[in-house]
Image (cartoon, rainbow, N blue to C red; front, top):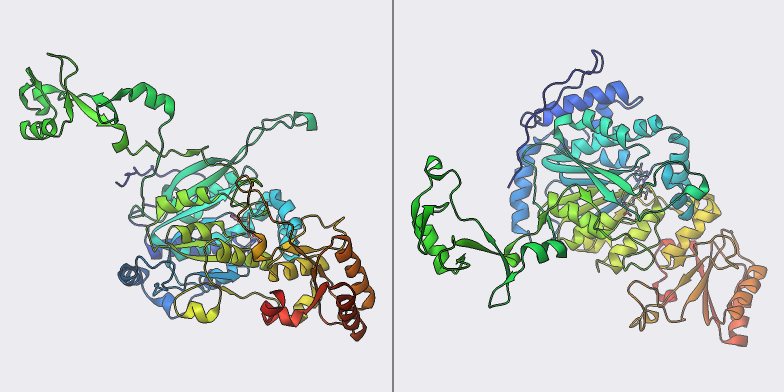
Length: 574
Ligand SMILES: C[S@@+](CC[C@H](N)C(=O)[O-])C[C@H]1O[C@@H](n2cnc3c(N)ncnc32)[C@H](O)[C@@H]1O
């Protein structure tokens, strides 16, 4: 069922800032393009509309989006159940994570190619996680540019313009933000998509109550985020969602239980408005009156046992079973999605990680199986995993190489998807594109970031604290160390005490003293195996590694950056 919306009247803001409401039925591609052209040229300094659309950059972008959409849909139908294995879109490649600024990456995508967009871009409030992940590139980008809310909006505007361009006419757009900028974001999105395509502000309760009074805060605690939902037209995909009834309501309204154990309530069968409304008049179970159904329909209901008379002579009533009711139609206040904490099964330690259930709800509402979701700020990949779980196609973009590697690991571990170009070409698995690292670049990035890169590339877990880590930059838990999780509460890390330390040195040649200190670490923690990462090793260092093994039986695996880049480490990690 599609909710119908009445168009709001044209509203005059000022003579200079008049925003035309978009008639959804008229908001076709060229109109949106003109709107975006205007906005891009007038408001996003330094970004030409021509460049923003990448006109002429692909043959695809010259085709009519609607026609391409139909082609894709037809083709997708054939592979509708193969979201996890197929490569079905004629328009755009899916199951790809692009590493890079989404502004650049989006320009490579054709017009009207995705069904659903979710974005959760960072704002100044997200500084901690940037430090946590050591993403100095991103940190610089955001700290420098988002000194003010206006700077943030200026940064986001051309990116949202591109997102509006790649969204299909039947598509929906979700923008996740918080109190810092949400009001400005809403105005910006109204300008880009059109005020009348705004559907909802979803208020998501993201934390439990807290008091900052002792810290001197003289305002209310903030426990919610806002998620703005826009669509491109009234033809948008919409699947109503429901939440379960609460027990109090069930106990009050569905207190009757029939002989088969099913709960039910009784409902009125009489025809409101009587004859004037055209309701039929006849007798049911000895009671004559106007009814809401025809005699034939009523007989069917009686035969099906759906009409009940609570006592002789009482007006017959309809028997409505609880297990046939879909639940409460979903409203815009979402306070029922459990918050992620370190006991959650899905917890990765990524501070802005959103719950899978939150993403799944949006994806279910606004897309169908095999539709394509795009998350252009995809962090640790929650939207991608949720899409994969729900048999949707997906495209992810993130500027942070570390986030891309974390995401890849999550897709491999959680979705059991395999990563690799050759496999992906055959229509299976996924790929990460445009990871920037080369040996030369890795020599130049800050040590902190280099450590993160190396540990994650080895499939390890980086140390959360960068101080007091006693020389251990990360730990590898071999697969066999993750067995039955005996005694663990859900989500708890219950690794057996089998882990290998990783130490990372951004040095041209790691020398003997470094090996000596790593040996001390391994001895102190009683580890049988450990990993060193560097660009190269002096012959003294390698000789010492051999001597240490002969003396203690402990293995130090000396990996070079080249070996990691060439992914030649599998054997050494075994
Ligand atoms: C708040 S996090 C997203 C978290 C995500 N929703 C999740 O559940 O994991 C924002 C992400 O946007 C990325 N990002 C920041 N600027 C970007 C840009 N210009 N293009 C693409 N990604 C960007 C950051 O690297 C970060 O991973």
